[in-house]
Image (cartoon, rainbow, N blue to C red):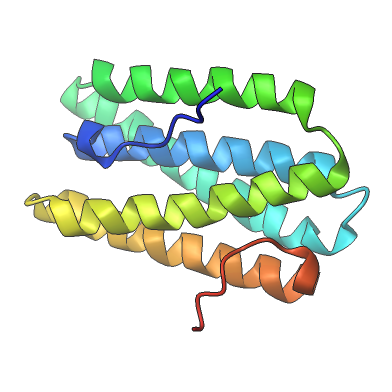
Length: 159
């Protein structure tokens, strides 16, 4: 099974970007919740990610209510494929070590995803939001690496 990736080409509006960020944060929180028993040192990151998720949900809700625009079909389809893949992978690779590797890979990919949006979009609002999200993703990677050391599979971004 080929793993579907977040596609920066499906991000046409800030609402699409927020929908993708919420999807990422939900996955990260779920993964960390299941890992806290084996890796207690990630609890503070779980709380930080939950706050980010709440913030993004409030911003998205405000924009949807005020502008009456919802995330586009392209982004929803992309996120649905990723969700289905993650459900399948959870059945196959559900050991704590495999879950940790998938969490770290998700954090790496989310940072790259936001970076690709920053490079490719001409929309200043989307670019600024993606920069903020990329910064948060980089912080998340740093915290995981600091908390878990060599157990963390996050890419070495220092080199």
